[in-house]
Image (cartoon, rainbow, N blue to C red):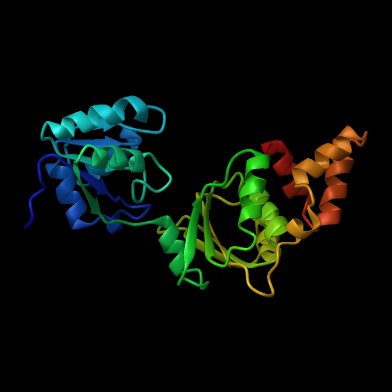
Length: 282
């Protein structure tokens, strides 16, 4: 059996839901490490308790990475072994584990990946869409302007696209993707590896219809087919404002919010509820 090496950073994958996806190697590394850098120490403590692991924890997350990251690098340089974990899945994917890896590499420290589950790849391989070439986008920006700018850049992208999204923003994001990218095949995977795992497959219109009738729960992964000859982004061609921007323009022109939402939803073929939620989000 290989032993962990002093002065090494281990990027340690953890389950995204089902604890049976924890690997033997990950359990061993977490037990033998000097310290575990965790995104949420309370969440990770539950995982460690389940596997009878008693390694000390240190909090390392987006809001303290600037101060804690260099401290962890100093401990690595002093010969300690550190395992970094996220709340779920592989560290470095939409979390600050990537920053710690970069700092460690810059300092000449060995970085070793310990493979584990990934929501993006789980959803992709079960989507039924093209897996040969794909792009991981992660969580879309929070502001309407930046989100729209990102989606417009993806209109001509031929690779399959992978997004993460919270259940509270899923319907609004699906509506915006449909508006900007045009009607495409897409899949929403939710509660991956858990008891109520679900894949909803179809085009944007059918997905919008499904979630208009069934409120999404749990973290979601959206898989979107890339641009093809018969898939075009209508918004880019027409330079239309986003639904939120269109509602704002109508309100500025004197229309009340309720009527503005109804008008935009009707013109864009969207549900009034989705437009309303998009306005609330902004």
